[in-house]
Amino acid sequence: MPVREILLLGNPILRKLCTAVKTPLAYELQSTIADLRDTLSGFRAQHGFGRGIAAPQIGVTQKVIFVNADYIGPLINPTIVKRSRKKFRLWDDCFSFPDILVHVERNYSIDVAFVDERGKKKQLRAEGSFSELLQHEIDHLNGVLAIDRAIDSKHIILRSEFEKLNHKSPVAL
Image (cartoon, rainbow, N blue to C red):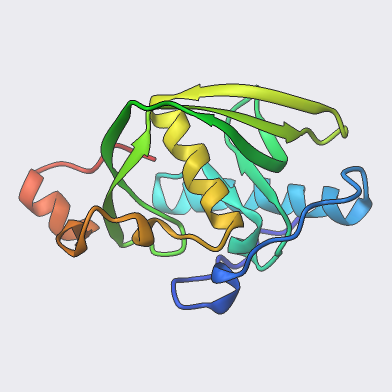
């Protein structure tokens, strides 16, 4: 499948509420999943970071994310069903604004219900950076971007400036 163009900050599709997938085994959905996988792989090869991608980032307004992990892959209709009270802060980045980092606060752990690519209902628990990744990607399905989650306007920085000030790259997301 082709590497798709990633929509950038300002594109109105990124702000749309995605629709639930009704037929997980449909050819069109399987094609979208393959496009998400290939686009994620292409982005990682070009930019050196990235662990997940959401369907609206390639212009598809359906509730699908793809996570770069052997045991995960696509999550269809993912929903956070439980959040920890414990939170943590980190610098987040996004394919839709790859030159910007945003300091956000996220729940340390979450439980996510979803359907896999075979149509089976599943649930998983995520902690730490994996929890943050899933929260970030699920936000995309609701038209919410990491920039909306900034602790405040002083917690948004260009990646190049962050690297200059900190003499290092942010943790690869």
